View (cartoon, rainbow, N blue to C red):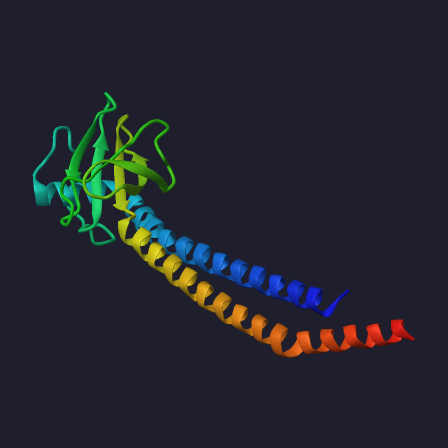
Length: 201
């Protein structure tokens, strides 16, 4: 195998390694961001009645809102959508994020009993992580958080990794050109000249 072929294989292996590392970094960061959202939803879901009671006390009772002790929820609700799926499968909004008051998840059957990504039916965010919890009377509490902040962070990270990868590839291309021009070409010319001399004799 020629030296040029070996260099090409080495460069290709390095590029694949860098691409794999960037992909793993991006996926790990995305999972971390979504994991934070899911942890908040699961924490609230474990005390859904108290969350509904807290938001009802703050915003006024919706039709058919549950009653119960006014204990506080285990997390801040400013960025959380809270609603109830009624017996007729309609969704009643109990509270919405303060920065996106029109936000409303698209909750279709089957209702997600674990955090799942669903498109929004209204509001400025495109997607939400949604979790539902049975209330014991045929209705379901709906808890949802917009993924916009996580998506934007993931997008910025992806662009940064792409820019860094492009910079690395540019440097590699310059090094490759330098190695070929100053290292391999003189050796190849000398080898060709030596072969020509041997053939002439």
